[in-house]
Amino acid sequence: MKYFIVTGSSKGLGESLAKRLMSDGNHVICISRNRNEKLQEMAQKKSVSTDYFEFDLSNTDEIPRLMEEIFNRFKKENIEEVCLINNAGMLSPIKDLHETKPEEVRTNVTLNLIAPMIMTAEFLKMTKTIRSTKKIINISSKASRSPRPQWTCYNSSKAGIDNITQTVAIEQGKADYPVRIISFYPGAMDTAMRKENQKAKPLFKRAVEFIKNVLSTKKPAAHHPDFVAEKLVTHINSNEFGKELFVNLENIE
Ligand SMILES: NC(=O)c1ccc[n+]([C@@H]2O[C@H](COP(=O)([O-])OP(=O)(O)OC[C@H]3O[C@@H](n4cnc5c(N)ncnc54)[C@H](OP(=O)(O)O)[C@@H]3O)[C@@H](O)[C@H]2O)c1
Image (cartoon, rainbow, N blue to C red):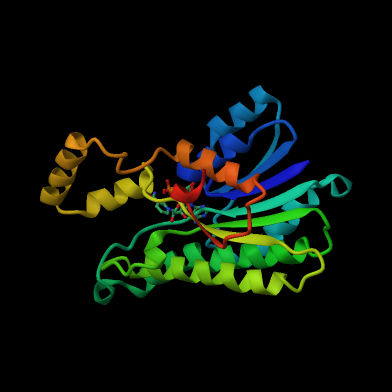
């Protein structure tokens, strides 16, 4: 059995990943605050095994207990592969740092950086003696490398995620049964997060972008998350996985 833990599965990329991963031989563990009934129905229809944890990842003290519960459900003698996808994230606050409240900083960095760091730490502990294939995918963003005004919390958290990827890759180089890890840059996706970003832009700018998109014959400004999920799962299943630490959507065949 291949086990996939997907955070942020109620909508957007996380939902698309969970849908794409629901197939024979896979067991998908979904985590988000809101239960995704569509995923549950799909799992039943396809007769694939899933677990859903309605869990707020900002309760970081509870993450070790959550991970223990997840791993207790695995059939230990039957693990072919185990994979953690740190996908849950948030964009806000979208404002200059001098206008940002301490609580807003804390909320963003807790979800985007501290939670995936603890999830990763627990995953590494729990899988230390498991000899099967082990993978971690941190969903990052190009924003981690390009300073963007009003996005300080998001940019900094994603830069931190990339640092986790690099550091864990070095640490796992010395491990008996190493975990392979990557940061994945999905590019712009048509999700609730993107809508939030669009809404924050001045009306004039939005109108200009809209007209440009309508007139453009080039590739879409944002991909559907199902398209991105398809590409990412192809990469996860390929022999190329882990050779490059930073993987761009555009670089996946
Ligand atoms: N959209 C883009 O253009 C874009 C571009 C580059 C990178 N990314 C990255 O891609 C990933 C997915 O983004 P998306 O666009 O799919 O976002 P989205 O549509 O806003 O979905 C975010 C997911 O995270 C979950 N989540 C939020 N707060 C949570 C919490 N406290 N505890 C548990 N789960 C929580 C949400 O579920 P609940 O609300 O039910 O908890 C939801 O399932 C993120 O890491 C994002 O930074 C997105």
